[in-house]
Image (cartoon, rainbow, N blue to C red; front, side):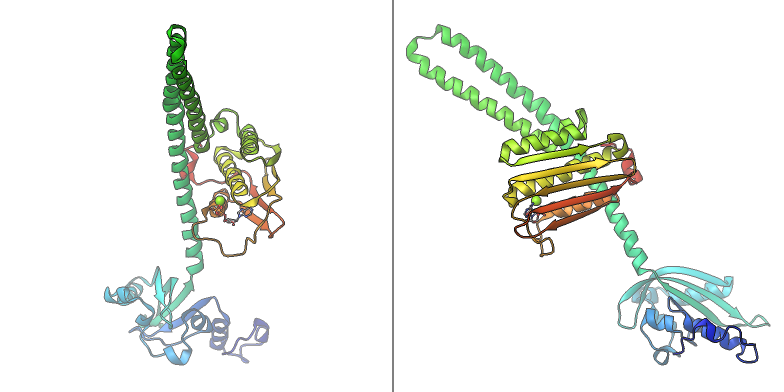
Length: 374
Ligand SMILES: Nc1ncnc2c1ncn2[C@@H]1O[C@H](COP(=O)(O)OP(=O)(O)O)[C@@H](O)[C@H]1O
Ligand SMILES: [Mg+2]
């Protein structure tokens, strides 16, 4: 097939190359569009390299065949190819988007324009058909859709967790506190009234009191894991510091925070996401790293937000295939993607792990999320 560049014919006069040939060369040079002619009844009359590239047939294989071979069985059954030609003949042109079939049976998402071609007398001589492969664009659109949907699910989960956290804290927490108080009051009265031989019983009651205290702490901790009220009350910087201190005291790993956060620039959605990413990263350090030290760095200005969490633990190779149920890193990546940012995981066996996220501000969040706040 000829792929003459424009310089090979521009500048020559019409006697060198007929106008029709120029068009032929032009069409043959096009790779990104399938451009071909159909006879009035729909049989393929010409073919270009773009058509070969997109649809897989060579010119020899397809010229003379009916163009319905490009359509899915469903479309053929519903008479779509014929219908498209009828409308093009009636109105001059028709545009369509849909699945088309390549020679090898694979499908691609096509944008198709069919234009009726008439001679000087107005009789139909055929159709010009231009097809573009939009599969990649459609895949990106679907991906964007999926991100938006998963952002909504994430948001719904956050809301639900916040509700449960409030219930736990306000209801269960208060009940436990009241129980403890009642036990203490009755215990104190008994202590004064009881003969000394029953003081062992009193000791047992005191033990129950201590267990109730531990229960209260556990409930508060579960509530805080679900939804750190600190994030609402004191903001991201304080909430991260609290997370770091809590982590230090729970796991004996030293955590250093370098935080310079401007919450108004980040917005509520990003604030929650960043908190969750740090929380998950610390959970991973506790579970996998055997680290001595962790550093959390977060800073932002009006244009950019940078987050880094690094540990000095055993490390791992992020390129190695991960377990199918390992959703921690996937979840972090997803949260940062929803903010239009990028999360990278650097690590080597024996050399710790660094998780970095760069987010451009202001965050362009899905309209459905804009109203839900945190
Ligand atoms: N800080 C870290 N240090 C060492 N290994 C890590 C660290 N973070 C993650 N990993 C490795 O990456 C894997 C995937 O992590 P993740 O997606 O959070 O799943 P999970 O924590 O449930 O295993 C972990 O199983 C672990 O092998
Ligand atoms: Mg994990």
